[in-house]
Length: 205
Image (cartoon, rainbow, N blue to C red):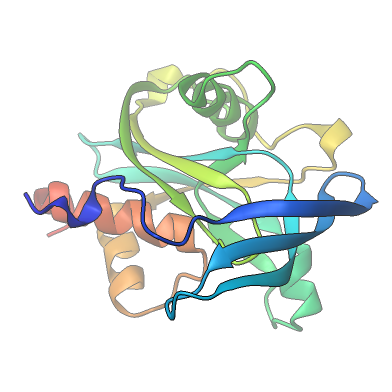
């Protein structure tokens, strides 16, 4: 395999020299000075805003016998701000990793909170950045298995976190078709479905 994708130190020698917190709430927004070596060899400084609220997980549980998967639909403020005609986003279950919690533990917890299922056979897919120009958040993506016997409650999320989540079980062939036709709007959901399509195409066709 090419070493192109292996971790390596390049010649930018980048470091944050100063950060000032501008807002602290659910997120922390800081204005930072980033010092680095430009491709022309000159040492430069640029100013960037950095949005930090921790790291997250996302998980797509699949019932391989019935060729279906569990997703959620929920109101997203960013879609409202963008004046989307439908601000209810169809996506995989996801959430932040609590302090001291593993990514795997967070995936199991979020699936039970949002979907109402105790999932099993977690399979790590990838860790990725959704918007690295401003977000520090690294998302850890998983596939999982479930059956109808694994249901423990109705799902829907947590009231104290203002979650109002609709749980949907959708046929995999429908999800594959939606991906190929560009009808899904959430990047982490597209990523996990595409991975499953490549790894286990027999589930879709």
